Structures are given as C-alpha cells and as structure tokens.
Length: 184
Image 1 (cartoon, helix red, strand yellow):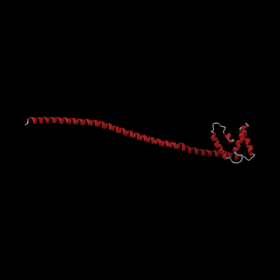
Image 2: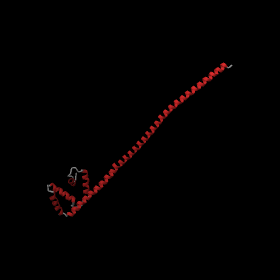
Image 3: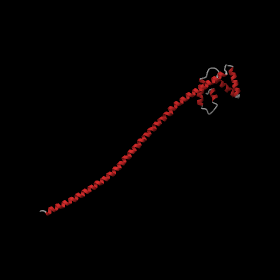
Image 4: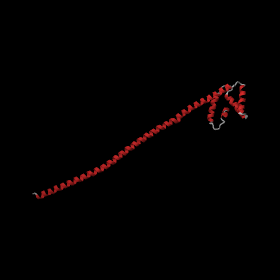
C-alpha cells in the first residue's frame, strides 16, 4: 500500500511509479525526528484536499507547525536536506546505471567488436585462400595447356623419328635385298 508521501508526490500519472516508490522510501529513511519538511508536506496535502489555495495552505500549515517549534530556517534546512537526499540517490542511481551499462551493454558491444574483428580476419583469410585457389587453378590450366602442347610436340617428334627411321630402314633393307640377290 502506497505511503502518504507516495500519494502526494505521485500526482503526475506520467511519472514512473517504481522510481517514485524508491525515492519516497529514501526520503522516509532519511526522515529526521520531529516536524520538518516531510510532515509539512503531508499537512499541506491535507489542506489541499479541503480545497484551500496554496498560499493560504502554506501560511496555515506553517502557523500550526510554528506552535510545535518549526521556524522558517528549520523548514528551509530540512527541505534542502531532502533535496540533498534525492541528489545523492540520483548519484547512486547514475552509478548503478553506469555499472549496468558496463555489464549489459558495453561488454556486449566490446564482445561484438571482437566478433566483428574475427569475422573480418576470417573474411581476409577466405579472400587470401580464394586468391591462392585462383592462382593454383590458373597454374593448373596453364600447365594443362603446356602439357597438351608438349604432348603434341613429342608425338610429332616421335612420328618424325619413326618416319626417318622407317625411311632409313627401308633403304637399308632394299640394299640388303640387293646385296643378297646381286652379290654372290
């Protein structure tokens, strides 16, 4: 169940109720003994419910509080005390937000950056591998052309040799036949 202070400070429906509850709890925890700003604010809220205008409500509440020892200096000092309590809560909240950002966002952003760096490194390696593959495939194609060219040259040389051999052998065999037939 919300406290009176939570009802008093929750007049704007656009304000986050969890944040208001947290801040009111901090104010209540820092409440100083006796009648100070928080009790003054509660008394003002009661006056407001009666439809009394702000200026009259402030003067009437202050006049009543004066009878139990509250003066303007104490009221201002306690008001500043609660402002400082809220500012300290803001500082603590900002530190908590920074810590959460570091844990939940910054570390993940760094992790993403590391992953992106690894992806780029792998892409660079892949590019390098693709270049090597292209170079090797080109060398294979070049070798294949050279192989066929050499095969044709060798085949041509073989054919030329065999023609020459057959030509000479034929002449020698003809001579052999002539020697056998003509020389007795």
